[in-house]
Image (cartoon, rainbow, N blue to C red; front, top):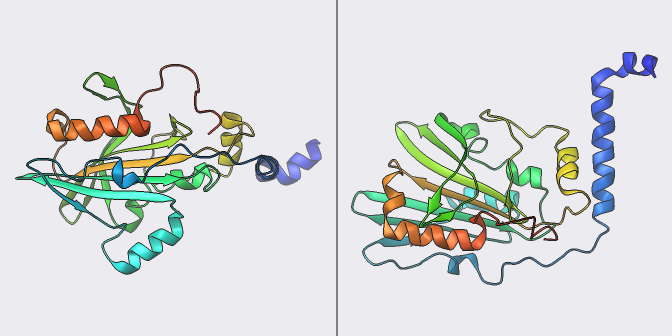
Length: 243
């Protein structure tokens, strides 16, 4: 055993862990795939009209070609990207959804602003991890917050990755970090063979600081809708373990 370790060392151990993780995923895929909880289009989950606000639906990207590449890469089952503006206030809400078993958790987790935006030129200038917020007394699951800048333009951003009803984060406090080769094993230790869980990714972005938005009635309405959808802090246990 010692001779084997001297020859192959840590890379060899990492390869074994990876192979075990892949084998476990193969076994997990033999289990029946449950239905998701989403019973209506995401476009109906948040308001299309709010008195005094201009509301517009946006696509996945700024151009048709970027949108098509995004569709192909993300393999979404549903999404909504909606912008709200009034006077000098402006914010957008993006919700993406994957049915149980559609995408590995680690791949969805790689499409955060920390990765996608920084790889195309944005710079993260401020960052807070696992931020706890409430809206009208409703506790939300911990979210991620950051400011991302490109050519003088700022995006103040909150985002959440929800897996089977609970917020997911691989940990660490690094920008543009990739999930490790052992992330398959991490998922197994957290979820066991029950890997068929539906996933949501929610991102809220504004060109202005967002503290005041949390006091806006329109913003509260949307956040309460998102809490009902998937952002509310679970009361007890893992009630969505089978999803």
